[in-house]
Length: 248
Image 1: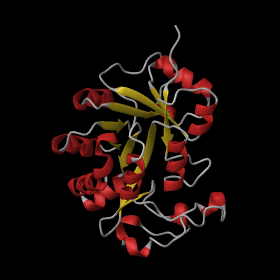
Image 2: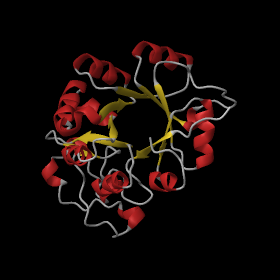
Image 3: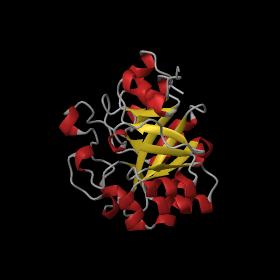
Image 4: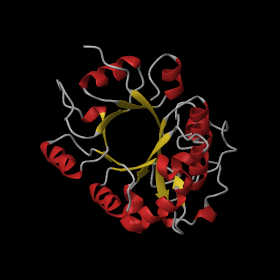
């Protein structure tokens, strides 16, 4: 049976070509026609939502600052070009803020973004405060946004306080997480390909849309589509779009 190519999600922008979670990377993939992107959000000590996967700024800036314990003024001027990976190539970049991301996304109304609420910020600031900060920053593109997290309780709270779609990132593949998924009924389910059991014939059926990450070849994209994945998250979205996979 033939399967349609899955829709492509730009994982942290395009981290093969740009520092991950950079505004420059997101702009490049949106200009190329990407319809789906994903970003990670951490909250500074003074409540500014910034785009970073890790709790520390070490990989992004070379400075080992804990984001939730550092005020934005102390990080805003640091070069954020992933120096270990890119050297000085992107030394002009600074850490992106979620409000900048939202203004950029609003210029591409056909595009949608998965905005991941990260555990360190949820723990240090509290779930409701993080949700409130993120929703305020996303105001220019709220209708284009999906809130995403590994943290089940955070998504339960999102459901209580707003109408945005939610995406749960599975912490493991197990009967327990399948039961939790059925109880939560998320709009999207994300799973790391490494967590899928060997010999799997079909992803769990349910009301959600499946997304598998990280997928960087057409062959793997088609393989996961055959299991029931409608989406894959990739580090090389422009390359896969250019060579023929669906963009959404």
